[in-house]
Length: 95
Image (cartoon, rainbow, N blue to C red; front, side):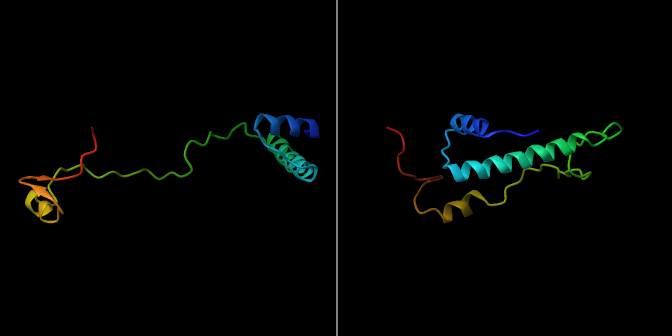
């Protein structure tokens, strides 16, 4: 399978790309190489090959989600640049 320069120009137009004539030839050659490679893949016998769902057989191991306080409320407020009793003071963001 191969393509021609008119197809390259149509694809470039649809993708809103502009090429000079030299670049058009490069893109044409590259696209033809890709299409030839795809044709080679079609020749492979995949009759008894299982579909690849994941790249590896590893399974993601998740830890149990345990809720705990890592910093106490008082310790967090000690580092606040501005605070108001038990809360952080921040600049107003809504009108």
